[in-house]
Picture 1 (cartoon, rainbow, N blue to C red):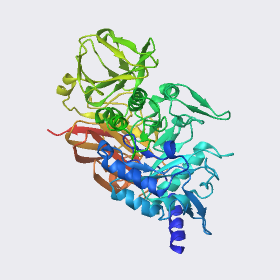
Picture 2: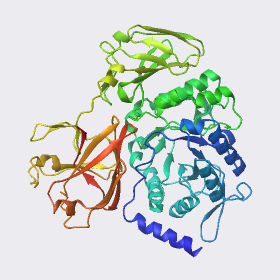
Picture 3: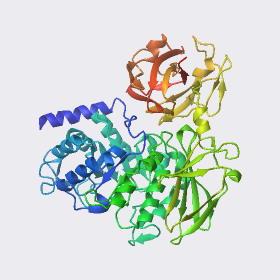
Picture 4: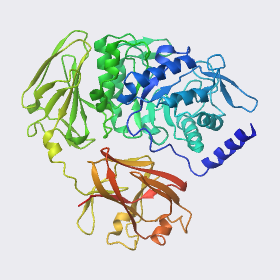
Length: 559
């Protein structure tokens, strides 16, 4: 017991060194299963083992699902030192043994708690024990925490969730942090630096349209939740996702509605957390959950949510920019009766200001693939007409072969801390700050002298406190140049800002810009050769002493 208390003290001290969420997690929306929608409070270790067994053997693991998440009502009591223990009747072997079993299946284990003194189900929650509970979860081998908002009393949401974020960070174990705050305090405005995903609405229930009213709270249907997502898309991206709640596929809706529900969540780049009985589901339900082509829309490396483009006679057309120049289009029939959907590609001006993407159907010809039938459905040269059954979808991937042919890598330059393009002294154009997860930007004095560079203006703006940087990138070999200068007047010597970073697997530990550059206000460039194999450049940052900072990034193709 003394060892556990010492571990907790070490955890608390580590937090003081600077806390943040794990920046290298949830680069695509998390995929897994959660116990609540099907089993509610009747969860136990036999059910969890059965769900892990099913996921490991029915194709879901191969499709990308990896988290087996225990929701509410697993908790027992706290011991005299305040450490939480599972309900011995439900989890007699303990959570550590259960985590070991789930891990042995090649999967990961998630758990649940709440910001208050009690959970939504009336069990013991984490208020006042945040660091203690986080350390316990880490020692058990937990990989994911869903953190609810019941019984929050006078707590401020951002502060309460930041406390648990800091507690998870202090454990040293990578744990995905899921904020279940129901959207009450607009988490899309602040939760990106706190967690990896955040609920945007109240709870879902297995209905395609409607509201289930419980007098003092409501549950929403698929379409009600879909409509609430429309203004939130710019908040989401790699490592920070809007969460429209768990899936109800296989829980009582029709097959059409299940298919539409799953398609829409994939268009939203939503976490795909199934909520049905994985051990006893129909072939049709498994076929929906396992469709790799549809899942690829959700897991696309760009991480951009779809947007509604048009509505005609109850059929709403959504478009989602995808990597490699492709698009996805989902036409959802909101009516319970079949509708004819027509779409003239040549006259459609589909463009997304947020991602700076234009489909350009008038000049580019896309090949249409129906992601549910698996069949080619023509091209965008010809207007589309299709009958969509009631509460169903037409889901297409628009392949752009010309974009794939033209995807010759060019030098990419990004200037941190600015929102407009910048031209350096050699005539090179640097794009505005983008690709960073979390952190803030700052500008220094316009005449601040920077040594060792022909372009001092590059180093007068910076992004600091970021957890990661990601960018879709064609596979191949590159040199990544990271530009640094220590311009903060509060840093007066070595050791005052030290951080670590990882560039596509190349690790740099205890990096001190002041030392590397030879003093303040001096430019330093770290050149890193990398090989991209998964279509994305990922750089993660970890603070050791003070927040990491960077002034610019260059990505130069080999040759």
